[in-house]
Image (cartoon, rainbow, N blue to C red; front, side, top):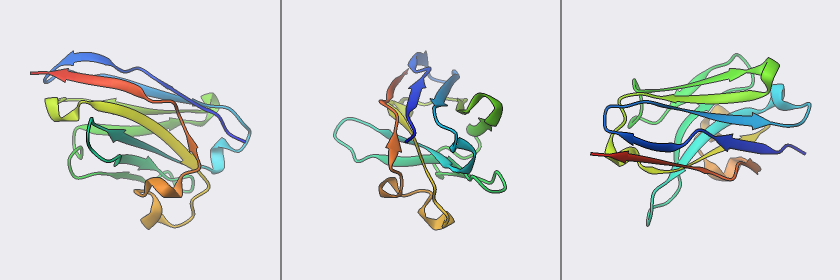
Length: 126
């Protein structure tokens, strides 16, 4: 069983930065692929970024590529999402997710993740 606690959201002006954190409990964190998803009001949950458990490969949605960076600190059982050059369209509730996913094409699929954080609100003002 893994529990995820995400934090770090807030209100920021367009062009600003935020760093989200996701602290994981459990000894199997190192074998979990970790992802970030977001959901804006009236929209479906969408993939943002993923960090694979093997090799540390990173994957990004086209909409955030070059602006967001996902990273993992295994010693702290924490995954981060550094968000730079934020835009109003980045406004959403952001969720971290984790599971033992072995197929990289599943990394961007919300249904592939069993464990989820409670979500943290990110609001970008224009």
